[in-house]
Amino acid sequence: MTKTFTYDDVVRYLYAETTENENELIVEALALDDNLMNFYLDSLEIQTQMNKITRTPSEKVISEVFRYSQQFSSKRPIALLYN
Image 1 (cartoon, rainbow, N blue to C red):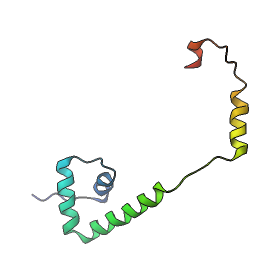
Image 2 (image 1 turned 30 degrees about the vertical axis):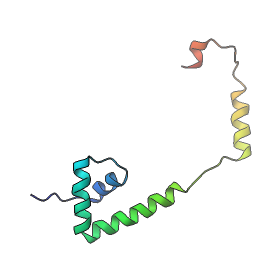
Image 3 (image 1 turned 90 degrees about the horizontal axis):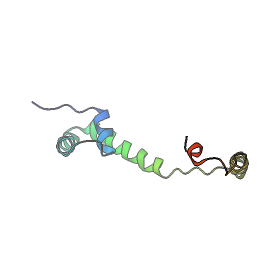
């Protein structure tokens, strides 16, 4: 019986969330199904582009975080610091 793979399976493969056995079957399915292969290639490109995205907080946000954190006394009991 031939296993039919979905786009969800391809995404799981892309993010290394599949077993070695699934990997072999998905690679075979990609070679045989042009739509699945195109989805994989598109998803791979999107993943690459998303990995390039970086976000940097503004100086105002950093200052606000520091200001907020300075409200708390460093003399609090250690047990309360981690709750």
